[in-house]
Amino acid sequence: MPAAHDPGRRPLPPDLARLLHDLRGPLNSITMHAQLLKRAVGDDATAEDSASTVLEQVRRLSDMLADAFAVAALERGALRTVDLAVVVESARKDVGASVTLADGPWPSVHGDEALLTLALGHLLRNAVEATAAACGGRTPLVSAAVEAKETVVSVRDWGPGLPSADPKVVIRPFHSTKRGHRGLGLVTVERIARLHNGALRLTALSDGALVTLALPSGR
Image 1 (cartoon, rainbow, N blue to C red):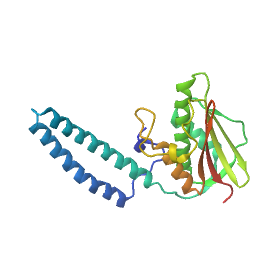
Image 2: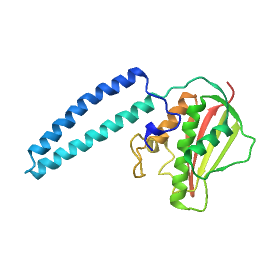
Image 3: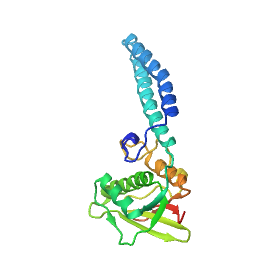
Image 4: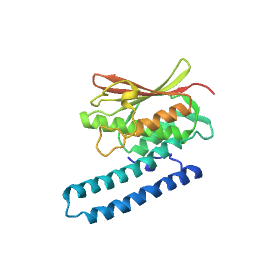
């Protein structure tokens, strides 16, 4: 799902919006001249293929810039007491798929509700897609608990698993094993976790994966 369509996504700040606009100027110029070159070398198959590649990569770069700016622009808004049950339920509605919620009571945290909803939406969507790809009879399980000085929200799926539990391997912008995805879901979640002085943790299981959003307990 493109970053611009994520629930909770805020508009770019004016300075970043202007910078993105200015960066797209040269890209538009490259696109125009590459199109002219492609038409001019129509009888040279090799040159035409090269011009087509340039056009394709410029379009890809333009999309990447917009997505990268959207993630970089995420900032924590006003903090308030947030009921995690409400956040998860809202994220579940945004995803529009079957997810099992563990029995309560669910804890509360001090955070930005829109950003937390965005983060949980990404985690639920990933878990639903992974589980559906491996076994259609089960649904992801979401639970929350207070552990020491942290409040954790865990999303358990029964998918094909993770290639690694090392975040540096799994959380890489614009790298995704899923067709049509840009690899920004976990990148976005990790940034939101850091904005809340928390962390995103990955656990590779023999029959799926466990992804945990850890947030500080208290204020």
